[in-house]
Amino acid sequence: MALPEAYATLSPAVPEWLNKGDNAWQLTASTLVGMQSMPGLVILYASIVKKKWAVNSAFMALYAFAAVLICWVLVGYRMAFGDELLPFWAKGAPSLGQNFLTDQAKIPESHRHEDGLPVETKPFYPMATLVYFQFTFAAITVILLGGSVLGRMNIKAWMAFVPLWLLFSYTVGAFSLWGGGFLYHWGVIDYSGGYVIHLSSGIAGFTAAYWVGPRLRSDRERFPPNNVLLMLAGAGLLWMGWSGFNGGAPYAANITASVAVLNTNISAATSLLVWTCLDVIFFGKPSVIGAVQGMMTGLACVTPGAGLVQSWAAIVMGIVSGSVPWVSMMVLHKKSSLFQKVDDTLGVFHTHAVAGLLGGLMTGLFAEPELCRLILPAKDSRGAFYGGTGGVQFLKQMVAATFVIGWNIASTTIILLFIRLFIPLRMPDNQLMIGDDAVHGEEAYALWGDGEKYDPTKHNSWNMPTYGEEVQPSPYITGARGVTINL
Image (cartoon, rainbow, N blue to C red):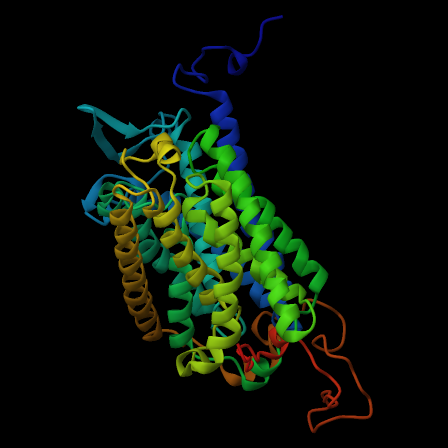
């Protein structure tokens, strides 16, 4: 019996340039990254917040995922990976036509010369695969950013913010570092998004939190997760999905992908253990929320160099990402008036901006020359640890971080000030008091309370529970990050 044309060795659906293995892996990696957001972060956000904000937090992530996809195919993809308009931005155009989507994938501004020969990034699968893969990265960046403003941002303002930030902030970082922009050709290393995704989302989220304003005082003082076990399910999807996140970055099922997947998991596990140990040492007990934070910092930190560093360096990255962000969140947070003023709900600045910056800088130290030669445009790329031009590489990483930080502060500020002309950025206090029911007319659970233990003998005028002196909740729940620690 004759095979259908789709399964033939060569056919209109299987052109000579198509590598079925690469295409299968890239589509799998895309799905894994997509699942980090939907349902991963949807579940994580819904469960890590106070019960009255579960629906709103989940919806912010859900809406962003859908809105980013439509904006991405209409104009966003080619603003990030299309033909150059400016050294940091490409010309926007739709990514919807069959001729474009069925042609071999390529990044036009990635062309360069090696040994006198022209070279450009041309994966062995169709453009449709690359467009979708890069969409999943764009979507998770916006959703991570949203973690900074949970529990008070006006949902209508969020709906306007998502497409504007995608088009005028994310695409700039993506083109500059990945799409053939000036940082790409200068030789800055961002293997899979330490700067484009984590540093950007952390800085933009912190900036947004400043302009949106804080939660209610009662929410800032006590913000218990409404379902810790469900939070772990979301965190598990995030961790396992990172194999597609970093494993898909080489655009092929190759050696670099294998190294990246292993290093990703090593760094995440190391960071989680270090963070947990610090919690036990200074607070006397391990925290599940703290363990999840440590997992995230380990994943974010290794991302800019996952396929380019040796596995011992991934352990070092895990140690640093499990300790430095812990100190910034639990110690420096209280000492800084800025951190006290800006209400970053989930601490995205600490878990993503600090961790992503550390990872980018450590990639400038530990990028291994032989691993770099496998995929990077600059043949002499190497970390400072390996001598030669490594010191220059570290300086390039610093300059790129400065650009990403500056652009995200400026663009996020301008976007939010523009939206504020038409829509209030923060919900009114009457909605903030009620939560989901006031904003959406829906509630997550048909149960009483926000996760607190009810004591019928102790009430205040609002008939809400109060707490005895014997209660010593986790600092992650009380909002008392930055408790005084004598180090």
